[in-house]
Length: 422
Image (cartoon, rainbow, N blue to C red; front, side, top):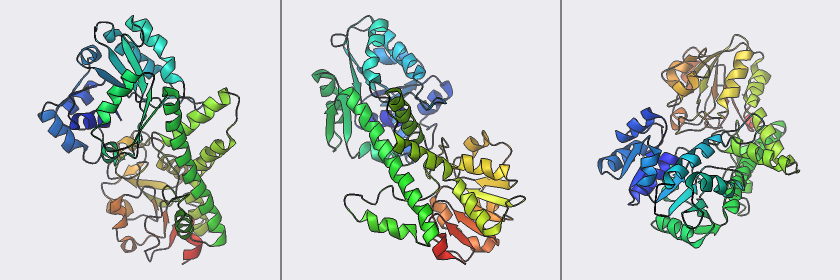
């Protein structure tokens, strides 16, 4: 998020300094190379670095002293109980505040990280303590949530549906509106706490749509109904829309699971039990195992079977494996005695750190050669173009309904296999 945000503002004509504690990442950026896989990012970084509009450093102090606005985009990972870990954001705020102490000019601190409502305003005493200044005279505070989709983050950053700014005063609002003024999108100004809640609500609603679609898909299996046709039918209703109605193995990534769990945890702390959101997470945790259930219903035990798992990232066009549904899928396959050979166009090395015992292929064809079963977990474009029938597979279990049954090999999709019996 920080890299995309910085690259976007630099592209819009601002001079941007990126700060990270990991020197290897900083060095990569300064060479014009992206430390993450994101479509189009390498090309843009190279262009911006060569023009001197973007650079990276490990020196927070110099970066703050050389700038007028600081966006804080550090991670807020989940704790075991689902609540978010704020130690990284507090450390970053302390460092930024210490640098502000040396400045005469007013400085705007913008929280970009996803945080529970009330967090941004709750950081003000910490900033005042470490900067020795008062909000309003020495610094301003704002909240600016992101709504980026991994894989198309640059496009979303330049062409967002809306821009939400959580501000406490006119000065902070003026600065943020000016920064975003080249982008043609509606701007919603609210309080920082409201902006924080908008972010969580958006992700919780999208996650709910996915889990709802998966619940309906599982019901469709029992009635021999094609869930794709059902979702096409309800998606034509303008009150519902067709987006995020794709049934499959569940959602993952750095946002939806973490944010829904954080909202559940925060609600429980306030004395309210969010049963619907708890159900969203419960169903999502079970959904990847539906692929294994489908396989065993058709061919029996997977013990000793060679299973090719295609797609290890949580979605296509990214190397991000955080909360990927491939993780519980592979874990369960191994526990049932299957031999797993896995392939992903970008995420293999990240996945290998979690499952070093799994065999990894250099291509989809290599993974499929000699496999008994193929399980598709992420719908990369290249997976649609494979001639699966040439590999003599016993079964294909399509966790993303990527192929829509367009094969002669015995095929099972999520929410559509009963209408495609072979």
